Image 1 (cartoon, protein in one colour):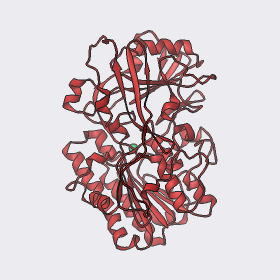
Image 2 (cartoon, helix red, strand yellow):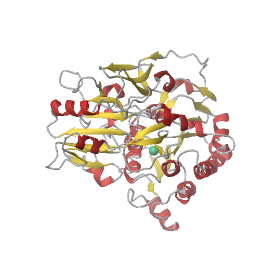
Image 3 (cartoon, helix red, strand yellow):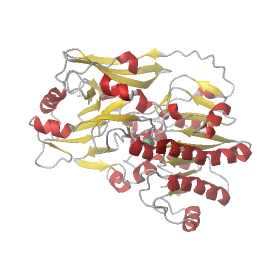
Image 4 (cartoon, protein in one colour):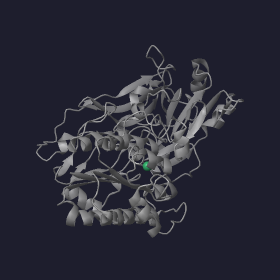
Length: 499
Ligand SMILES: [Zn+2]
């Protein structure tokens, strides 16, 4: 049995339709669609890459954000050399075992071809490129692999335009390369193809723009080339075809600078932990704050300076030695499976926008960063960002729909168990046995509401979670203002956001 996983970066499942994505629509008809599939938290690409590779959340694999602070240094996860400051190619970068390592340890191989950032590519195929398996990063073919097939194929393709956006030629290259590797010989047990669209275009234009729809159509057309090969040949050869995404998208409705807010409130903060600051922050949809001495007093003051702002979403802090969150009235990072020695001291998501912005765009959220208002963004805990695509097809799966909770961390255990390989102890996910061909699925699942809330005088913060088969699945988050904040925005209705 073999697996081909085609990751379509940032594709939110509600964007599928017969006209724009006919191939994916067809795949979901003949295959099995996971209707309640979600990403890990934070819903950022490098975190998702590590979650896909390890079957664990960030508390296991340690890639706690696209960018984070470790040992006082800022780690930009888009760069392999930055990631390697955490350890080496042999260990210490991911703190969980990756599927590439399991395959290599059992004499199996993984083919990876991708157009995402260098760091994400390295994480998603961790353990396989180090073992000499074919790993072809389209932007620099020999960066990850001295593999003979990679060396043979690389000179046959011209250089891609740098930083192409929309990345039409770039994603076409990923699929062209797949067929080049097919010609070279048989496929290994697992092939992972990562297309950096529609994410790039969503970040440029939002989801509804004409160009975004055109690029999504192009993504589907490229996927369709693999699907056509699979329908004609691959399926009969026992290949399982998986189309999935790493996260969804929300829309930037309003912008905020948390750094400026903290500086105006008198705190010495910066984006790096330089000698003149007391704390360093990273900000996008999730804001992380590391205090120099990791001491709770300063962090508590900072949290209070933020707590009445309309853009403050659910806040978390790391656990102290007695198990309680470092900052009162925040939830522990473990509530979202994100507690790790590398975790920030204080970490919060930016909220959904107020009702007025959400009338124009129901998925409008606050954002801190360089993208403009109106374009797509992800990383937070909104249902739109967590929502991810997953369609499984082949004789290892039944067809239809599974509406039980599933997430990106469930893919590794499902694949490894189908290959009869052991699951690493760091796996958080479960085998999606509702997907197996001999299972009856009456659509009845024993799902328990495991939402967690914390309230203080001004606000109640809730993370919507479900407990299913002893695993927690994230569904969304909401903040209810208990007293009117100074900007006097109407409250978000948590029930509305739960779907
Ligand atoms: Zn992504």
